[in-house]
Image 1 (cartoon, helix red, strand yellow):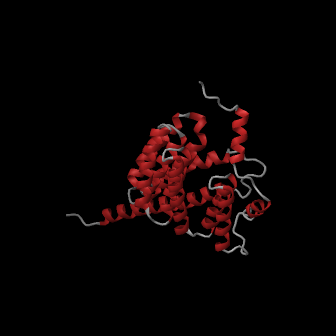
Image 2: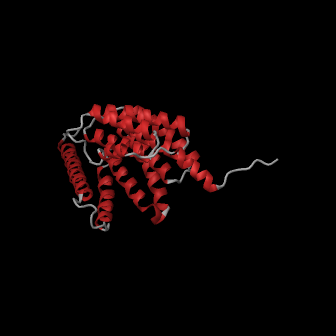
Image 3: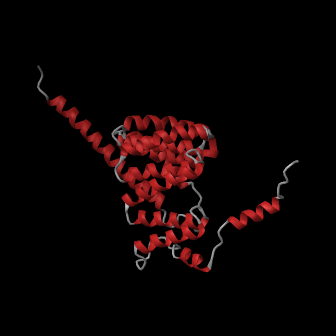
Length: 272
């Protein structure tokens, strides 16, 4: 005898019954996290207790719980509490692996955040190791040309450049930059992001003129960027690019001065 299955509507009703419902109290607790910075009146023990309460009442993966946990990380980052951010990021990855598996896209995204957390606390070796594994797993699960895989590759190159392997970081970013450019307008924003990463890696490698030339391309692209009426109000991106240009122009000028001095000394040196 064939087993009878419930209709889609029955299944949906059953699913709704299993989903914890918001209450007035959970709504009030959720609203405590609507600010971009932690209110001074909310000490950290109270913040963590609120997170624990929502986790108990709504569940670890409820949208409200996830939103609150994300805001806590934002507050911690604003206060530069990087060791605590790292601890939470490690726990988040472990929980997601246990619940959804290591290859789930959201798990891969959290692993990327963990790699950056390691970098922020100065563990560049750990960040490099995390990024290498992330590149391999993302390419296997999502494909080598997936935007997330490209982000992993860019992160790995950045970590290497900052960890004393600037030449290798430059090489990896140059390859990635060419691949992203070949994908055309669909990857325009990602290509620009890779370009700014490459500028930084070139600077770390001492290739100041090449970095400056590439930066000028990015500045020109930023000038042509159209923003919404409420976007980019402080023009922070352009201000940052101009600060980098000022620094690179000074480095290029210093290099030129050193070359001239070396040339003058060689000419003034007595013959054999």
